[in-house]
Amino acid sequence: MHHPDYDNNLKFFLPRTVVLNRLKASDALGFNIRGGKEHNFGLYVSKVMRESAAANLGIKEGDQILQVNGIDFNTLDHAEAVKVLKFNTTVKMVVRYFPYGYQRTYDRNRPDMSVPGISPTSSSLSHR
Image (cartoon, rainbow, N blue to C red):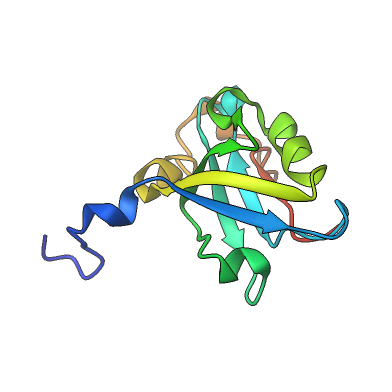
């Protein structure tokens, strides 16, 4: 309770819907993701580019992606999630801020996270 980041406003953690629109599917989404079913984690926003449409819509690091265009992201592996995000011009996402689950994706004690120098769980969606 006495931590500076503590916030007892539970609305902050409720799911919310954001819609990203792009002219072309090759345009950047403005954020990176981390995680996936194959790593026994949800899919999380790991970085948001400043001044991007994603940042302007309030997407932030630690947001768990629950659903995109009606597809349940809890059942997708990382590569499938990237395809869904990259190949649509309208990306309707249901996300929730869940920093505790996101932080678990960096747990170095997990055997599926032990490839030195490579992060198999992270993809950039900020560049073509």
